[in-house]
Image (cartoon, one colour):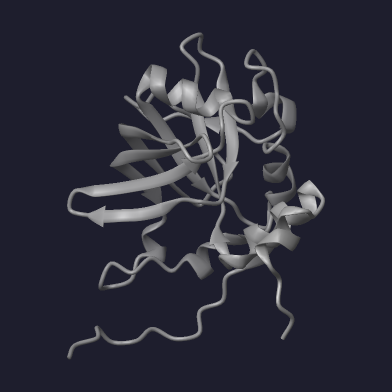
Length: 203
């Protein structure tokens, strides 16, 4: 096993270093976050840091990159207070990856890249029509992380849209059946394969 020192890692080329460190945390869920600007322009961004924060109340968070790298999503969420999270599948992951590009705020990214926006009654933020698992969040808090200028965005779950056939008797959602993908590093996409469900652990 080779030893990698922090000093060595710091001296690597930027994208090599980013890929290496990003892979260390393992496979992560990958989704598209849908927002709309106060001017009415829909926006999508790729996020691989979505995390469950609690079930009661139902809270979900994600890390937003620094403003210089990804300003539109967090600005739209801050302005409107609403956003959607949409799982990515093999059917459209190559198009989904393109939403990691930094488009001008006046660009309708749905139209530019080719996925389709859908809207549900009473929800201003767009959903990805092609996504089999999607949900609506209302902004609770944006927590600045001073150490690297990122932001932890916390939302309260408002609504979920998915097929009932994906939900098992105990509430478990079969995301393998849904085709929800995982990401690794900056540009790796993978299938999720269930190995086994285990019983609730008790002492």
